Length: 239
Image (cartoon, rainbow, N blue to C red; front, top):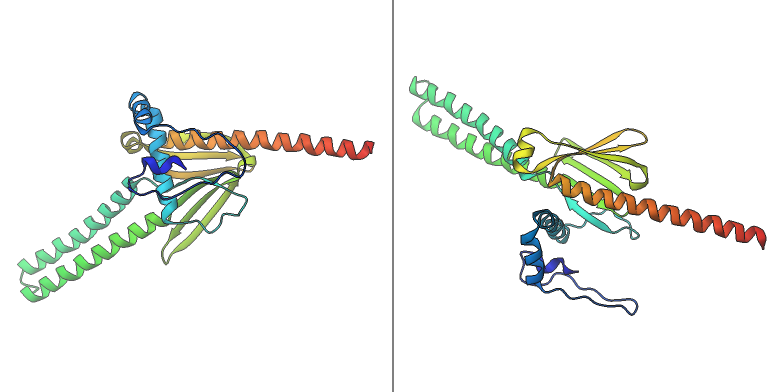
């Protein structure tokens, strides 16, 4: 529950209650800041987890069961939203330029030309808003049991796929030129049945490291449960 200390909001957003006797370790914020300033990789990891925590406070995924805990919530890098918005804006600027040519040629009156510009401006703003909603609807969720990818485009499609941690074989990272410059990339999840791709993940190395940790932890838990089940079966046979 210490993520609040690194968030942007001044007030605490969460609390914790111990079920059993435990030892509570308190770390002063200046100690953590000194550690982060000395290690950029740890600073990136903290930044990714804090942004994930703040997004989780804003929107609670509905597909998570009570036995699952969310370890990471993210979405594609903001660069992709900006690029798509820029391309859309250039299209409307092109239409405005064509309208200006017709206006100079005397095809449009001043009133008609201004009306066309107003309509194009409204359409451009609506299209950018649509792109923003689309960007916010794309979520990557890591839990202690699975990876969930939600890709929802308003009025077009609603796609979703899941990858159980137990089905992961290995992880790979792929970056484009822009990804290397702005710090994002694709996270490739190879399973027994194929490959799943999380596109344009921010701080993809950190996200891949977190997912690898969850995956290996799940393998250890699964092996321990198998041993316990086998031991229980032996005990039942002997009894």
